[in-house]
Image (tube, rainbow, N blue to C red; front, side):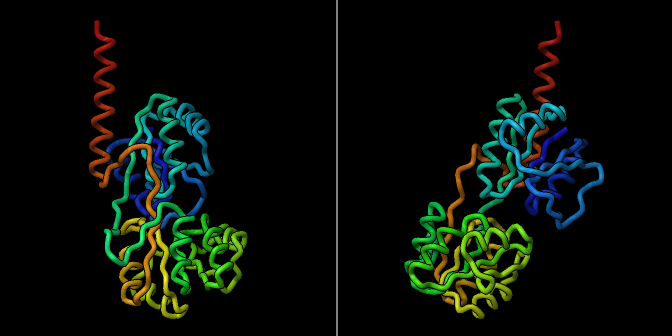
Length: 264
C-alpha cells in the first residue's frame, strides 16, 4: 500500500494514477475537507495532522511500502515529518512538486518569509490584498494597523479560515471568503472594488491560480509581493508520470535486491 499525503488539486489525479498502476492507496490529509473531484472508490482515507512519529505509526500499521508526498508547496512541516517518518521506517519517500509560476521581474518583490513580506507590503502605504491563506496573517495585520494601512484577506470559505482571520485581528469587513482558483476578471474585480495597491501571494503554481492573480495585479498597476517557497527535505518530481516512473523503479529494485539476498 502507498501512503499518499494530499490536500491539493493534484491529490485525485495522483491517486488515480497510483490505482491505475496497480497500487492500493491510503490517502492522508490534515483535515476532512471535500475534494473537488471524486477519488477512486478503492482508495482508503484518514484525516488529522501527524507528526513524524505518528506518521511512522501509520506506515507500520498499514504495511506501507512507499510514501508519496503531494502536500502544498508551502506545507514544509508536513513534508519534513513525512521525510523523517520514511527514514524511521525504511520506506522510500517521493515528492510531487508543483512547478512555480512566477519568474523574476521588476514588479515582483520576493520575500523570504511572512515577516519580510509584511514589511515590504506595508512600505508602499497603499491598501493590501492578502491571498496567502489564513495561517500567517498576524504579521501583516499588526504592521498594517500600526501604519494605518487598509488590509483585506481573501481566504477559503470554511469556519476554520474565518476563525484564524478573527484571531489575527481582522474584522468582518476585512475578510473575503471565496473558493478559488479565480479568473483574471474575478481578481481584477476584487482589486478594483477594494482599491488595492499591493497584492501579496505565494507561488503556489498554476493549479493555485497564481498566473491569473499576477495578470490582474499587473493590469491594475499593483505592487506584487511574493512569499518564497520554504525549503523542502528533497527535490520533487514536476509531473505525475515522472513520479510514478521513479516509484516503480525504486520498488522493483528493492524487490530484486531482496530476492538476490534470499537466493543461495
